[in-house]
Length: 96
Image 1 (spheres, helix red, strand yellow):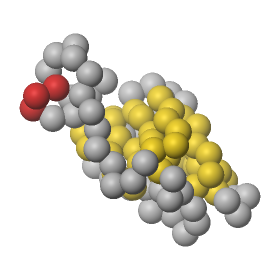
Image 2 (image 1 turned 90 degrees about the vertical axis):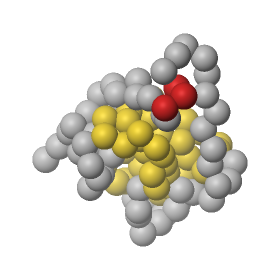
Image 3 (image 1 turned 90 degrees about the horizontal axis):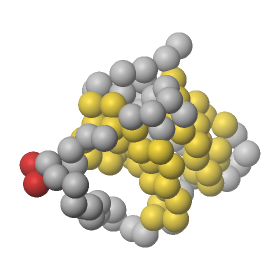
Image 4 (image 1 turned 45 degrees about the horizontal axis):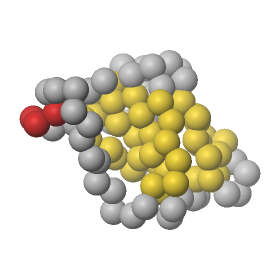
């Protein structure tokens, strides 16, 4: 996976800080997600197929996916990220 910071070039686990508690995580092919208790979906990793949304090709720090609703569940695949909102809507980030 990606180096989270300059001190992460080892096999020692590194704590990733979030502004509020994380309730769920998921792993894709080369990207990760964390769902906060506030319903925010954080994504980071490689974005070679737009699986992180409209961001640069590499995100080495978690970034909130901006949506109009709170996220209830998330699922990641090799080249996509899916978010199910509390309103029952499905948002998908992937190559078009």
